[in-house]
Image (tube, rainbow, N blue to C red; front, side, top):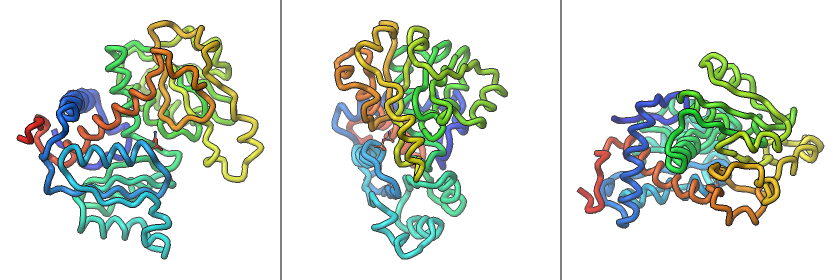
Length: 316
Ligand code: CP
C-alpha cells in the first residue's frame, strides 16, 4: 500500500488503518534496534508556521531513524521568505525541487490542501489551525488499540476545547470508522464540538452525547481524552478564555470515578488540566501516547515514500 498526501482523517478507511498499524508495530522494533538506512537518499522538509514540540521533533526523528535526511524551519513565518510576502503555494513549489516529502504545520484551516494542490511530492498535514491534525489522531488511535486491545465498542470522552481543538476533530472522524463506539463530548457551551463533526457522526450512525459536566461522564467511559483550553485560538476574546480556562481538571480525586481499566490521554502540551500527581497513575497514557507518535510517523513516512513496509533493522 502506498499513500500520497496525508491531509485529513476522513481519507483513512479501516483497511488502510489496519495496514498502517501493522507497519507501525514493525517500526517499534526498528527503533528498538537503532533504526535503518532505508531512506538514505530521501529528504523530508519540515515546514512549521506554528510552534511544535512533539510533531516536529517526532517527524524529524522518524526520518532520521529511517536513514533519511531533514531540512527544517520551526518558525516559517519569520525564518522563511514568508516574512517577505512569499505565498504558501510558491514556498511549496520551491520545496518540491529540494525534498521528497513535506510536513506542513500552518495556522490556517485548509493550508495543507492548498499546499497539496500545487505539490508533486507528498504533503503531510501536521496541523492546519483549528482544522485537523490527522497524524495526531492516527497516533491516538494506535495508542488506544495498543492499550485497550480493541477500538470497536469503546466509550470515549473528549474533554475541553472541542470547538478549536484539531486533534479531537480528526479523532472523531477516525473513530467513526469503528463499530459500537460511543463518544461523550464534554465542553462548555462556548467550546462545544462543531456541527460539521456532529453531522458526520449522525450520517454514519455513530452514537454521541454532549455534556457540560465531566464528573458524571467519568464512570461511564473507557478512555478520557483531555485537551488544553487553547489561549492562542481566542485572539482578543480574553473574557471568553478566562471563562473557560480551568473548567475541567483531572486530579487524583476526580479520577476515583474513572474505571480501573480506563486510560487517560492528552495530545499535549498540557497546562493545568491534568494535575502532575496523575502522571504516576498507571492509567495515564499521555507520555506513552507521545512516544507512539514516533512509530506512527515512521510508518507514515515509509508509506508515502513508497519504500517496502518490511524495513528491517539491518537496512534491507
Ligand atoms: N500534540 C501536538 O501536536 O503537540 P505539538 O504542538 O508539540 O506538536
